[in-house]
Image (tube, rainbow, N blue to C red; front, side, top):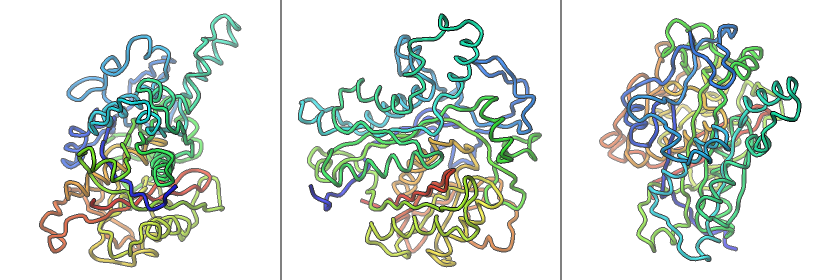
Length: 433
């Protein structure tokens, strides 16, 4: 075991409301596109129900038509697709993209034993539970699929990836609500640091846009309802007119690799993951503390693990979901750790893709890595006015090219935050390799 083992990112994969694939998603993100659409007239595929009874009439679906559409047949056989849940479909795609991007194809048993998977989900397949429960109530055992349990187990996204590629290292899954994706990547980093693996597929996936899921969030008064007439404007982190999050779906995966292992094989290195901080609010099931001290502890811990100072960080990819208290608490937390640093940029990519729940942390980690790699900051859309305490640089409305900014340093290091129900927090710190 060696805690001196450094970990780098060598592969990326994305399935988001902006499209399938890293390049189309990233280019649309920088071009200030929105993946949020109206639910008027939309029917839920499995239940056939509409969303008319839900106060929030906006959501961010993975597109299934047009350029960069998601087609399950591109990633899985018909039998595989039939026996897996939609969140597993997204995970399979994001993982396949990341593996291909990394160029890692272990040929020996030893290499396969040193390659693992850590992919989680926050909710998984709620609609499968709903549909099976209704079918069981109506017809009994006869209509219950033998794949019912494997389709609802959160860890089967990781399990299917492990089996598909023969990866025999750690086979791990995280389910920590909206912090899932970040925890998955952070835990995978530690597996490599502790010597349990040399390569890890890590990320999160979610496919829970359904009338039942939205009804639950609506009753919790968590969803945006004030911008139904203009869906692209509904997700508005930090803006004074924010009124709740927009639910989304998708997946993000990274390939994490021990640094010397990556160098020896000549791998492309996007960034180094240097810090991972975790904390609990120990306060409330859905609301953070008003001062954001739990979030501040997570960021401070990530800096400590990385051996870096606040002034070393140029960008924070905020968790900011477009809720009243959440965005304010995170702003306060960032100020606690970094002060009112003029050169620190903060943005929330949820303004473009909505809140992907258990996939959010992984997708946003990919965005953070890309910001470092390309020296470009994605914007916070719909940010037109702020309240008095929102004095940070939130990169409003337009992406920012950092190649010539900040004394030519570009984006040297960045933190991405994820916070979840139950008061669970995680921060990941990436830096130029």
